[in-house]
Length: 258
Ligand code: BJW
Picture 1 (cartoon, rainbow, N blue to C red):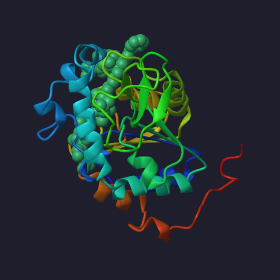
Picture 2: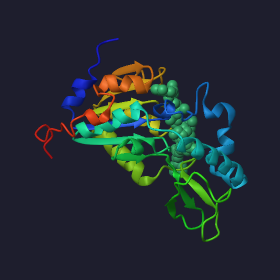
Picture 3: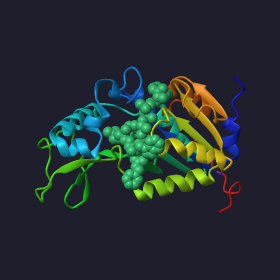
Picture 4: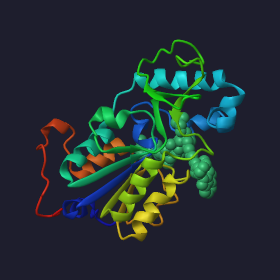
């Protein structure tokens, strides 16, 4: 493969957008959805990740989320999350768009995040639509209920549901104007997230991908790196494995006048 241009591109970039998927959390022990060990090998998405499934059997759906919440509560951000958090500190205008609902990017220190598919540490009242954080992995009952008596659901986006309006608008704004887009650990099969790198490319961004295997995006990416994100990203970005060792910021105000 040609030598990576990514570091140079990032050094010159004003706006950088990162898109992540389940693969970025795989080395933390969070299962991905597709692939040999993926959740969809042993669970049917139609039974667990659609509004119809929840209407049919809220307890079954909640049991699955309860299991995942407990599992993720025991996971820690990995070197890939840390590398992305460090990148934010070096870029004038940064946005992380994640499809992940696990909250690990925030725990790694990333601040500018758009969660396209929601967050499983939040619950939403089916009657009132109100959203609350529920960080305790032990839920009071399965399925849990709101104080108003209605059912609560996980505040995530299931198949057939619209993505949060603000989140998708921010994501489109970012990909239409970024200089560099880095895509990490997504199979790029689920829309509309999968289209974001193509939009960035069409608007002139330099697109780099990191994944264990080629994806539908590999054909349009300017560079594709095959391997584990936790190993590849720190090296690719030139980030020491201990994020604290970095200078607080190397942002150039002159590079990108506002
Ligand atoms: C590593 C690694 C390591 C592993 N290092 N790499 C256009 C065409 C066709 C279909 C559609 C379309 N538009 C909409 C649709 C329908 C549907 C869709 O896309 N279906 C396709 C599957 C065909 N999309 C939707 O329904 C979306 N809604 C929508 O479009 O609404 C329209 C609407 C408008 C107005 C009103 C009403 C509706 C919603 C999609 C919601 C997806 N939800 C889920 C569950 C979230 C909650 C939860 O977590 O429980 O989101 S499904 C699941 O897939 C989850 C993920 O975020 C998402 C993407 O998966 P991801 O992240 O890519 O993971 P994997 O497992 O697929 O891939 C992991 C990758 O990592 C692999 O490539 C590995 O190789 C790699 N990897 N280890 C680096 N260590």
